Length: 335
Image (cartoon, rainbow, N blue to C red):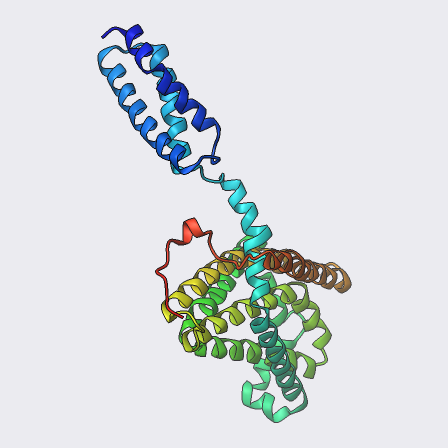
C-alpha cells in the first residue's frame, strides 16, 4: 500500500474528525452522526495501517484521533477527586438535610426518654436494686470503676478502630433495617436511650453524674447525632414502604435506598471522627471543659455543615441521589 496515496485519500476525513472532536458537546444531530461515522472509518484506517504499512507517525496520528473520537462519543467521566468533592459538598449534606423531618424528632424523643430513665433510676433505689446488685453498682460507679475505665481499655488506636467499627455497624443496621417498616429502628433507639439513661442515672445516684456527663459529651454529642440521622433515615425508608406517594413502590424504594447508601457512607466518616475523639479526648487527663468543648465544636461544625451546605444544595435541586447516568434509566409510570 502506498502510504502517501492513502493519506491523500483520507486526510479530509481525518481533519474533519479532528475538528468535530475539538468542538466537544456543541454538535448538531447531523454532526453527531457524522462524528460517529468518521470515528468508525478512522478506526478502520488505523487497523489497515497497522497491518499493511505500519508507519509510526501515521499510527500515532490516527491513534490520537481514534482516542479523541471515542472520548467524544462515549463522554468523559469526572475524575475521582471531583466525585469525592461532590459527595461531601452536595450529596451527603443534602441527603441529611432532606431527612431532617425524621431524624430531628427521633433525636428529641430519644433524648427525652433517656432523661426520664436517668431521673427515674437516680431517684428510686428500688429501680436500681432491680437493675443490678449493690456490689455491681458500686463497681460500675466508683472512681476508676467500669464506667470510667471503659474508655481506657487497650491502646487508644485499637480502641478507636473498635468503637468506629461498632458504631458504623449500629448506624448501618438502623439505616438498612428500616425497610422492615422501621420497627427494628425503633427498638434500637429504645435500647440506646435505656442503656444511656441507666448509666447516667446510676452515676448520678452515686453523686458522680457530672463525671459521667463529662465522659459522654466529648464524643457523645456527635455520635448520638449520627445515630439519630441513621435512625431517622431508616424510619423514612420504612415509611416509604407504607406510603410511596405517587410513584410506584419499587421506584420510591430505589430512590430512597440510594439516598440511604449516600448517608451510610457519609456517616461512616462522621463516626470515624467520633471514634477518634472517644479514644483520644474522652479518657485524656485534660480539664472537663476542654474535653466537652471539643465535643461541642465537633457537633456545631456538623450541624452548620448540614444546614448550610446541605440546605443550599437541596435548594439547587440536589436530593442526595446518584447522578442520572449512574442511577440508570427508569420506566415511565402513570399518574
